[in-house]
Amino acid sequence: MRIHVSRPLRLFLVGPMGVGKTTIGRMLARELGLRFVDCDEEIEYRAGANIAWIFDVEGETGFRMREMHVLDDLTQEDNVLVATGGGAVLNDENRRYLKERGIVVHLDTSVDLLVKRTANDKKRPLLQNGNPRAILEKIKRDRDPLYREVSNVRVFVGHNSSRKAVLQILENLKKEGLTQD
Image (cartoon, rainbow, N blue to C red; front, side, top):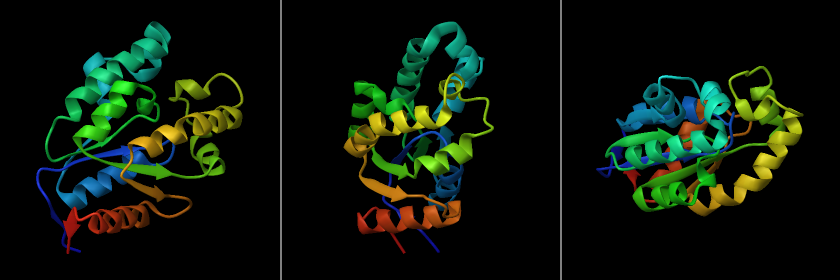
């Protein structure tokens, strides 16, 4: 499929941890000829430390401040696809950056699938203390309204392949007039 994109394009993926923002984002960016940036990876690069270390030393507040500065920079770039961290929408400024500066795609899925996908992941600080299912249920309950608030397009990922999710997103972007065959 040949994709034509209205330029410049800024595309942002939001959704819970484990939904596949990075995997789907890389594939989608390739299809659209956009530069892909994972916000969490950019934070680690700029900090010279991993997110778990940032959480340990600076706490969630310090991490969220770093995230806000990085997201401010990334959302002003042209021809970029940014996979945000799952909690980026918690900050009012981040939500404003996302809504005002580009097209936001909300990737959604069930808590069951999130539990399965994050079960053995030790790099997610919010899941290290307590019952992961209860934590993910609370996160989903608290953040879903914020994802809906900022998004232009919602795609339910479910057990679909990443490729199928990319095709669904492309179809939705076409419906919105952002791409054409």
